[in-house]
Image 1 (cartoon, rainbow, N blue to C red):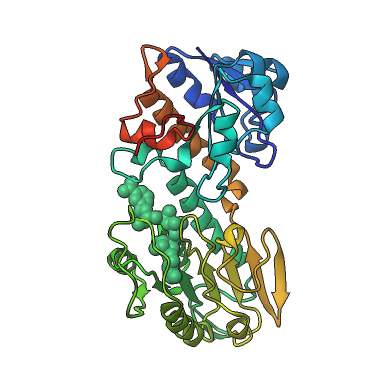
Image 2: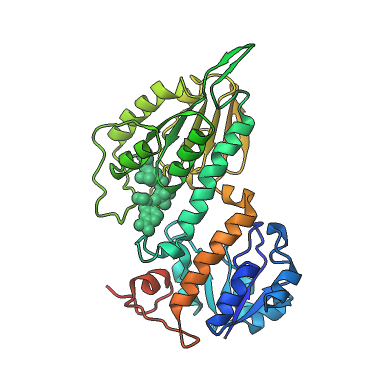
Length: 363
Ligand code: NAD
């Protein structure tokens, strides 16, 4: 079977890097790489060829590949050109795009969505969401530090002392925890909130303060994801955020509820209470934003506060982001293949979870 890797249209990342090519070949696959696919992540065609892949143009790849792997789903025209015999592996985000599954199924496409793999210990090595979220959390702090007109660490100089920056992290999942760790490494004082009680210990183990808001809904049956909170709880949380935001130099927001609009935790009135020069980095921008003023993929200023709306910060570090995605994707493909063929075992939690185009949906 042939596995094709396309050039991303929206991202600088690439789904498979040259180092992964020999490993995929060991599973019995031949590798086809679109010309220039890795260029923007600094993986060049010659490296792919040297690793044993064939570099070809997009139209040839679409017709020859049996499996096509990408970070963003292919455009429909490309999927049509590839045909319904092809297996597509990508991130279709069916929890955000409710119609995508019906659309793909009706057209007879066969698709695995890597973002639907359950967040279990067994599947950890395939968890692209964690890989990308971790980079985004790290980049969020670097971006904030870049925009902040003040220092992060405490400094004692001959010209006087500088107090450490105060960072508030809202949502302490994978991205939030990495943001906390990075801010701490830069010497900031960090506080964090999450509705999941499980986050408390993790936050504290990174040397940050966990801020509790009483009355969060139980999420133990939500597969590790957060559940939507009541308006009354969110109001209490906003009041708590407001009190801390006034002292914060940086707020990083990552709070998301899968399949829903992100909760608004930082209303305009809170932004207006913040010190001029402060920075908000909103990683939930693509699902509506945790700050009322956030505009997705834009940096705006409001009364001296910079608000960076970016849910794609992993793309600012395309080389390592591609490396991690590539390893996650390889682990999934290896798991999926048996004797060099796709083993569509829908009873398997990982394969059944990722395969979104089942026509005979199980109950
Ligand atoms: P996410 O991106 O869906 O959400 C980010 C964070 O926002 C979460 O921690 C969530 O609890 C929080 N949040 C939601 N509403 C909030 C609110 N109103 N106020 C404050 N915080 C709010 O989450 P994620 O980072 O993808 O992680 C989801 C879960 O999966 C976590 O529990 C994580 O520990 C777990 N996980 C498990 C594994 C594994 O076992 N293999 C791997 C990765 C993640």
